[in-house]
Image 1: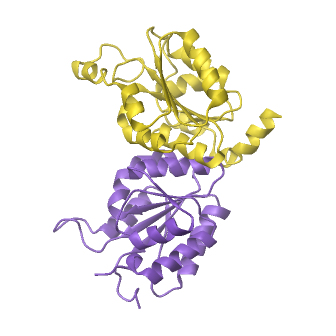
Image 2 (image 1 turned 90 degrees about the vertical axis):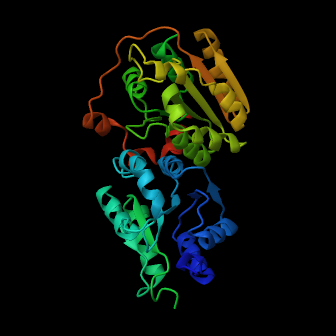
Length: 170
Length: 200
């Protein structure tokens, strides 16, 4: 099944909006949940691939420290592994960077936590303001919101990108 | 050479370069010796000093110094792998190595800690792709090498600084106050300009 960020048109649009909003560079692990977005970004401005999600956040924090406006591509499964990095490196200093997080619909194991709810809860508890892509609103509007948080208010933000949400592909 | 003399040597050699200190006693000791706008002290995120330094070096294209401990490097070997693959990254990665996998200043390491102390960090750095790798046993050697590497750095280099001597107790962790006193990011964001100002 094709999901939202594997939909080429949607991925290209999100890629364009993120670049137009001034986010660069992009850092990520080699996750396949946002492969179309990853490819689109890599074609346009390049994506730095690193072995671990928390390393991606550390690198982005360093870039931000030195005046950059980086974005980290994460899957929902990767967020909990980054809790320490977010809690001690991003949140205390209000490091201006963007986390682009893909949201799955199903738990990894039967009866497990809903990844979307868990990610939203984690972001909230970690003090990261999040904005969710919604099929009912233009993508540019949501990206503009995170742009304002990161570039104008100099705070971290998360852009949550649901995978395979009803109506998002149409 | 002990942690204190090694940190003093690093601070003396890095007047204009960004320096990222790992969390814990090492960072607190450094801040106590000299707190500069070009310093950044991790308040947690053990192991991510290298990642943070990589980010600074990528953004500024200028020589950036990371000061790690033995245990923090072991916590995040992926940081070394990333630095090693960025062949034109001007990063000087220094590890103050007391060869024990224990918090700095702790005494009587356990047998597990002793086994961890045998990891060959320099071998790992070479395998990861660092351009030059040094093991430095004396303060004189360390001072010479760090000055040379900072002056000529155009690719990731790795300096393992072997600590033979003990230290006086370092400043205690004061928790929230320590975090509050870390230089806030909005000031740090103009880092390249600060460096230019210092250089002028």
